[in-house]
Image 1: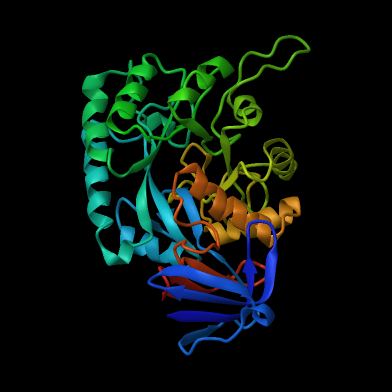
Image 2: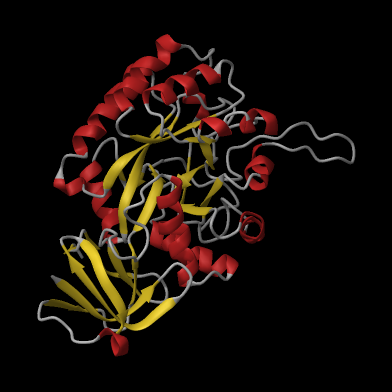
Length: 380
């Protein structure tokens, strides 16, 4: 048994100050205020020293950690995120690969998941192959312009069916339903996301019965329907905002460039705090900083001068969300742990509750990470 003392526990909607938490066999077995806890057991003790203790962060959409792509050095990428409090993550696989490239990268990452150095890597997020070729960083490298057909996608689905947690796609792609139905036949619990898309609302909503429940980096890399005189069109962003069942991923950089701070506040107002998911979308790209972005340090740019993901870790995204929206630490743990766990069916983690995995992080008021436990084992 292991015990944490002098903690401020971060619950879904409140705090427990001066708290004690017990861990046994990697799971939370008891917690509460010290004054109500009773006799303390004689066991290994970790003094939180008044820090906030919350559930480990869950980054469902991330390509890299620091300067390390998961496709090249997953061990180093995992370490960067673990040190910053992300105890569960999905490596994102991008649309720029051809069919065999997808299969190779999936198989490479499946092997990496067996490495203890990658213990926080629990699955993949497929940002391809069937996105809209008009959108996304480095889109000139997108080889997937043709009609969706089984001969192309079958080897990719077969390689990834046991490890892919989310399949992002553009609902307007011709014959996309065949792809969705094939994935669902192989994995009835498959989750889909709408991304890199200019789909009309009815096209996105048609896929919701099949498991479309996430909006990929909401308000980024989406198109819009024609705007008629004095009338604004509607498209992917409006569909994600309107439908209660869809979670909205948000990239929250320090200057509010991916998503304007006013838009962040608007999304919170519309979606509610139980349908917002913070992601890092961390990438590595080497394009020059374009005019107007001087001094921006947490965003990448491609060689077309367009935004290419972030240089964030999820704890920093939480800090930025607090700055831009007035969210509390309690709120951002919901956005970066509880909500992503629910969106991707990771029901054994994402909150402090009896029986849940003891994936826990120790943070100060600014979301700086001072300690990390995974399955009750101290990592940082």
